[in-house]
Length: 460
Image (tube, rainbow, N blue to C red; front, side):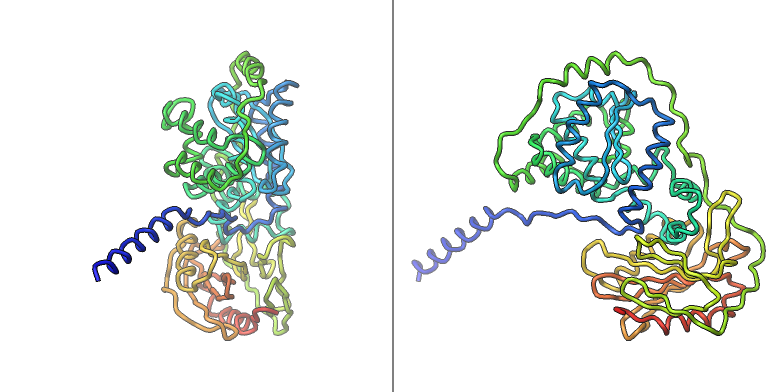
């Protein structure tokens, strides 16, 4: 009996040892919820790049351009970089920073080049920024910041002022703390992992990325030349340990640390004169959209209907209403033209009508109650004045589990409006509708909204 007990104990020890040797499952970062299409990212990045070039002094030096361009070419040739039109420019800024706009334009501060110990550290920061672009973190942040107004903004027939101008009217500009450039700790952790993989594929030692961040942290992450960097790139935790863990999964190879060209480029950027004071970015001092302030128009929904065919759903709506959509996005706004209000600052708001979109859970698998609560939380946190008037209740839409949450917010006409949020479980994601009407008009439009919900068919 004692021998049997000993054998069992030894077997358990061997099993535990074998389990300890098994590496944890490799994490695979994925793009999150996004109202923008990849083509929208490219357009937004192109517009924003033109603004950055107006407010910052771009370094015009053939050797510097060739050096940074060669690093960028190696990195963006990696599959994880995605198919975006990347560009790389050095700007005359003594602070240590770098940032990439949605769609691929990247700007590297001259101070970062001066502070790097080797080429791999510069490549590491660039790879980290490329990962933000590939994972679409900028427009993911913007989407979460304004889930109601952005679908209307993206509608092609409403976006006559350019995408960046429309975002500026929502308070989303290119200034300090812009949601397009300020990332969460979770986004930073994902960009570290994907950036390390991109670096390794391009032949650079991924550990140099962590070493450079640790160097900056030691210099003083809350002040001086690195203050803005750590404001936009909060430390997700022990970067070195996380990247060392990632290196275990990468193929064993001899990495490049330096090509011998950095010192020459450093000498050039160190001779640059003091940069001019940056000019304000478009939308930096802009506020939220102004409301129309007048009474809502007396628009009577017609008796006839039209059918809208979306991505995986159909819906009937009054035939005197119109659809405003972005062909590259699943979102659509359905409203009478009189229900759209353009404020004095040019922003378009939905005064009454319907907004439909898809919400993809962060976990990869949908849970109706949990994800509805998450969506409501994001809406109320990112839209000033929006509050829950009646808690979520269970209903059925097209014989599928659904929930209805009654929200309330200031109307772009006058007084309060009712925002009826309907979330429908589609299996892997949620289809959500926001049915909008001024409180004074809601009882008149309630029947129309009910008919639209009853007509909704999923998977058609």
